[in-house]
Image (cartoon, rainbow, N blue to C red):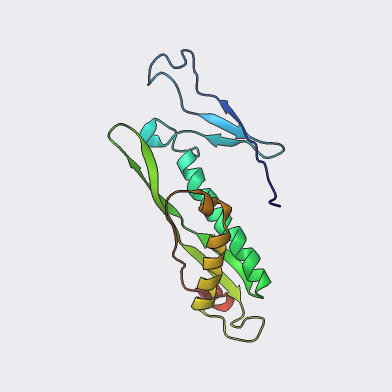
Amino acid sequence: MALLHSYSVDLTWTGAGSVGTATYTSYGRDHVLTGGDKPPLAGTSDPQFRGDASRWSPEDLLVGALSQCHMLWFLHLAAAAGVVVVGYSDSAAGTMRIEAAGHGQFRDVTLHPRVVVRGAVRADGSPLTDEHLADLHHAAHEHCFIARSVNFPVRVEPVPVLHETTAAGA
């Protein structure tokens, strides 16, 4: 039997100003996402659509969710494989296409995970290689709930493995 998980977020629009949506340019796109005891998240639309560049857009959050999901699965699988990860970062990027009528959709997202590991061998004593980490990235991608839920390609292009001593000297 499949397990079901539910998620809820509350959204409050804060950009009504004094005239609301009297015109396309009369209202702000700012809003706040809240949920339980989590800190509020200031949101807006993309700056190309009259949003505030200092706030998170839904497009930013989608790319971020893909990056987070991949990292969390990768760390889980690395721990299970006896790979000690001591650093992880990602420079994720997505491309969205807007049609003439204003409809849009993401075309792709690419993750560029950078992993720093402690030690040059796996738990079984075999050498830790870029190929082994690539296998872990592949498995993480296959497990990521968010990547499995979107209708566009999510690519993973990892930076070659960095060992803790290499990273400290870099």
